[in-house]
Length: 85
Image 1 (tube, rainbow, N blue to C red):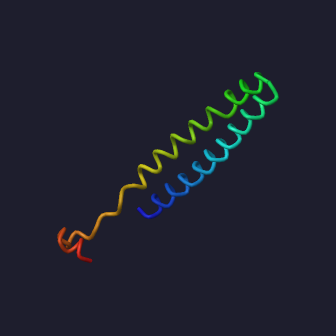
Image 2: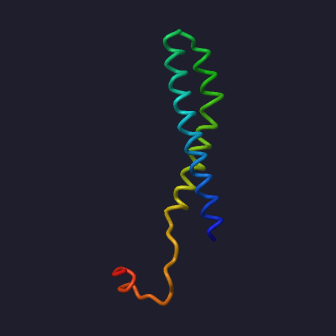
């Protein structure tokens, strides 16, 4: 079970990094295209970068959701004991 969580953490970190880098490239590219007056560059950015960023965001969100679950506590503990430890 620990290996699954570790793999999910790695997937989360990698897709988050890809999403952040893609976002910076996307926004910087749009700014440069607007300054240069190149509408074709904006189309290219939308076609080339936007879809992979959306996929990375989706995978990152699912991995983050899965990481929000905590491990089960020992079955011998009552809820009162678990909160006082």
